Image 1 (cartoon, rainbow, N blue to C red):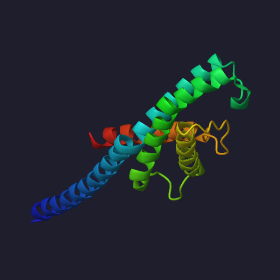
Image 2: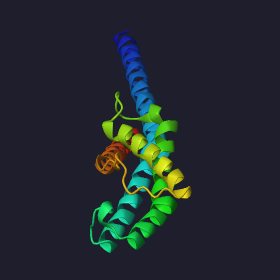
Image 3: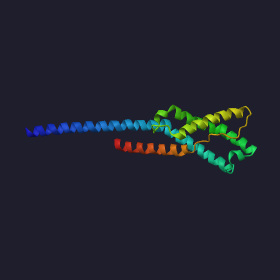
Image 4: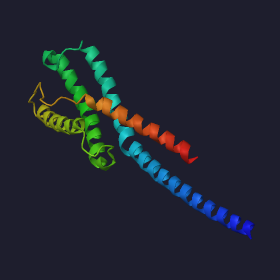
Length: 172
């Protein structure tokens, strides 16, 4: 009789331990799925676009000997406008689109300042592009690209990749 009771108790304990482990695994899987979505739809592409923009900007700064835009010659300024129209503005617009479509995937509860600054900068660049197309060659803009976006996108991406890796190991 004692053996039956012990087996029954062991079975019940085993059942609840398995149930608990199943719930933990389910929560980890849900978290992993959410992180995968954050990486796929927002932070991965954002990191790539920001990084590409920085690499291109470094190239141009070297080419123009790190002169401020207002000190560029007319020929240099014309080349800069081509790069802005063909590369920077489209990259910024892709970043803006990623953020607007996927704001629900942001890690933070509050909107990071660098994201608001990116939207502001991109909006201003769209207006400048329109003016350039109409012959109004404005040299300056008041909302520079938010340099903090580089560290934000990189640190957020790496944070999620590390958490993803840990969850994959735990679920195995």
